[in-house]
Image 1 (tube, one colour):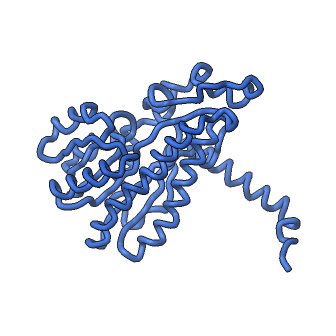
Image 2 (tube, helix red, strand yellow; image 1 turned 135 degrees about the horizontal axis):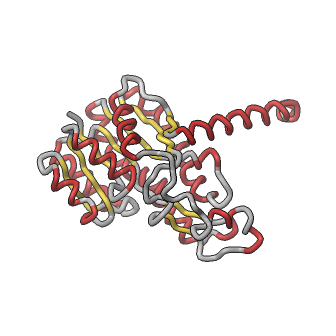
Image 3 (tube, one colour; image 1 turned 45 degrees about the vertical axis):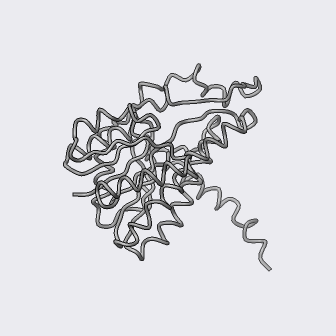
Length: 274
């Protein structure tokens, strides 16, 4: 039996994962900014679940939540940094406060969770970290520059962290989903208040009022939950994994294009040495 700590469980992948973990008999700390939205999950598994209010951008709440988890279950075996939301805007349209909040949630909030949980994992010389990213970090479509940048920052942090923690018996895996049928592109999606006309044919096409993707995504959240459980149980989990056929197809295209571009510009790139 493992103890999971999952952020962002009110909807989507976080909720599906929390339910799957508890149904298999593991312990789980299920969190959301509004705890009333996860109390039903805990009520269905009173012996194994702890529902907590948690805003990952509030360091005091992070510290208190991890302390409560350790007091209830003795320690955290699997940390899932899942809390987050979408934000769409052309780069020029992005509101400074919105962008700062986006990074506070996806990057600095995840870092706060890591700093709170890792001392216990280091003491036990075991643990698993799953940091939820997005295929968007690699595709970076127009209109998602800030969201892609936040997820790319989380991925870079995760890759360094993986090397730091591997000698201590703790694994770190980046989980980059494609499109899953959740509220991510619906209720959870935010966007800039300003829309500049010159970006109508690029970033503008992905604004909420023009996007028809919601409700048609190919990914099944329950299958994503099963995949993440498999990752937590793997003897040698990968540094990163892409979830969904759309995500795999997208990263294939991105990697091929990058290799091709490196080859085209190789002579100029290597001309700068002494």
